[in-house]
Length: 305
View 1: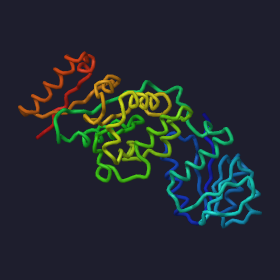
View 2: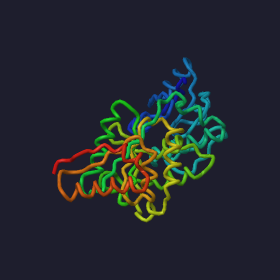
View 3: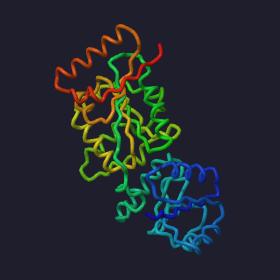
View 4: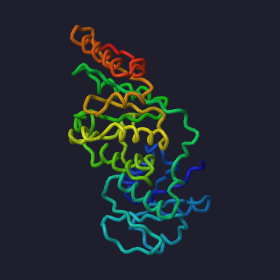
């Protein structure tokens, strides 16, 4: 799929650079981003190729902006209310990049062009789902899951989902306005495309993409296994991710059913009698309840004490 041309023109070069960096980190977007602080550069680009999306400062007068025949024009303004001509879309400058991108996607969806700005995923390889779980407590499970994700993300598109009762928002993960709870909400909507939703919600840790965990532990406990499975299936079918890592504990209802859809289960343990007893009980319970297939997917990962 040919990338769309997106140009950011703003005298405030720090803003243009920061927004451009944010856009280029969104792996799903099929856009080529360029920045400038001189309006003449926009006209020079237009002479050579079509500009599909133009983000331009309101400091440039309307007569100048009319010279650009871009597919969509977003006017970046320092105030929330600004009078523009019909074809222009106002964008409040001092807001997070994900909110600016969300407005761009909304405008594209209104014109029927939403899919044109995303990479096609029809040729994606089979997605691998890896669960990181342990019946042993305080064993460094989340640290292991993140390190694993960063390692795998060097060669593939990887998404980390923190599904623990206490996901540690503000610890491993900075606090965010949108969390895994928002992703689940959108996944419930029949018409939503989860790949589009993730574009505006995912954050990055080196090459690893992640979603900020839910801030309220009771919310995790209320979600049944079917909803988790539907979400994971949507991510597999509608996003660019080739690997999804699930960081789980017993807060996930019917956890064995969720583990069943995983390709691998990395089970952390330590060489210590109590820990070994817990692992043995867990594996025995899997067989007792008819989850032998889950037990066969377990890969033990012994941690140093």
